[in-house]
Amino acid sequence: MTSSDQRVLVTGGAGFIGTHTVIQLLNEGFTVSIIDNLDNAVIEAVDRVRELVGPKLSQKLEFHLGDLRKKEDLEKLFSQEKYDAVIHFAGLKAVGESVAYPLRYFDNNLIGSINLYQTMAKYDCKKLVFSSSATVYGQPEKIPCVEDFEIKAMNPYGRTKLFLEEIACDIQKADSTWKIILLRYFNPVGAHESGELGEDPKGIPNNLMPYIQQVAVGRLPELNVYGHDYPTKDGTAVRDYIHVMDLADGHIAALKKIFETEYIGCTAYNLGTGQGTSVLEMVAAFEKASGKKIPIKYCPRRPGDATEVYASTEKAQKELGWKAKYGVAEMCRDQWTWASNNPWGYKPKP
Ligand code: WQD
Image (spheres, rainbow, N blue to C red):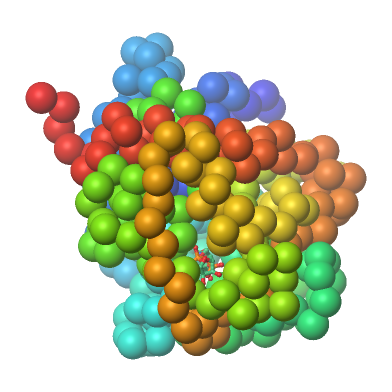
């Protein structure tokens, strides 16, 4: 079966990582259905995907407004189409919000996923790529993070990712016809090179790069740097930032692996670059890419933040044949193209 015959359901496909992955799926010849409740995304992003891939490939893209917490929405989808695989992005992902509203996260992320898996089993669709996160490494005792490290959670959001990894592997252990890959994202940043797609969080951004982006376009006055006393190269925390297009390609590589007859299992892979970058280094790189000065204010550490986190990339390279291509300069270049073209994120073009 070639990719042109395969139909992939992408949950949360209207979101930041979802839309970038859908573009690559269509370019690879897959037929794609998106289900998204648009709680944290806008249909404009899907329209831009259609513009970017052109009319021919757009015919292979369907959008369905739906919510994984409503089993009837899933039943409607699976009873009307035969899906060969699912890439499961849909879920809430703000660490701070999960601490304040844990039940919202357990309902959305856990119940929604269990509904999805039950419906997949009912319709004999047992190929799954799951959007996990480096947050399952908690505060790693050592770095780089290797996939066989003990996983632990530090907040309700991270707990949902940890639980969902374990749930997926329990399902596969009980029924080995399930083929599952868990992708642990490090810090997704950047944007499609066209400047037409990018991250557009609701409200004040929790994450570093969308915050820097909004300072650069004048929406926010300055960046609060959380912690300047870490035992790192410049006192600020270090992370493994990965270009969203590299992340998208990591999903294509995982999907192709799952379609290989000989693939059996429920396997976790890091999607990172293996390079650590500090907050101040990221600020400097964005200033260079944008030509804008990013005013900063040093603040106390953010509770729950780790000092330094970056990925071991060997397993994904060896078993998926995937390695990140882009560095921090390209991440900042593309994020600035998106931000400068869309200072207020997605809105209908004038
Ligand atoms: C990065 C660094 C902050 C904002 C989280 C989730 C993870 C994934 C990515 C979903 C830290 C510092 C940040 C700011 C700052 N999300 N920072 N000022 O915390 O590494 O990871 O987002 O999958 O699961 O845990 O990312 O971008 O929030 O922070 O100084 O305004 O930037 O303290 O050191 P994080 P982040």
